[in-house]
Amino acid sequence: MKKYFTGILVTLIMVIGILGITNPGFKQPYQLLDNQEGKLIHNYFIFSVYVHNEGLVKNEKGNYRFYRRYIGIALHFYEISPLRVKDE
Image 1 (tube, rainbow, N blue to C red):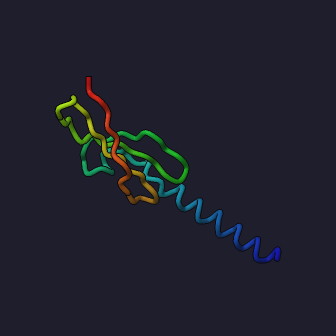
Image 2: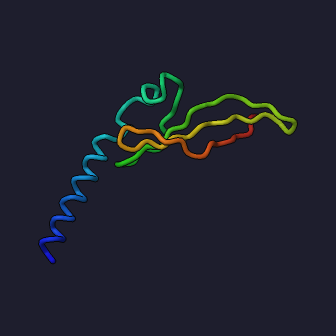
């Protein structure tokens, strides 16, 4: 049992280390979002969260600013739910 536990533990530590080294937060956000303006809002050891300004959208109830949000894991980006902020 100890032999298997040690192997699993070493593998887990190696995977976490590789993901930490390839964390997109170590690069500049503008390089990661195709030269568009972006901002790093959270940088954790394994993954990072970025926001990207999509623009001002007007509707009958008011002006809203939409932000696309991305999560970066091991140099790959995945879009998560957009953020809507009321623009005063």
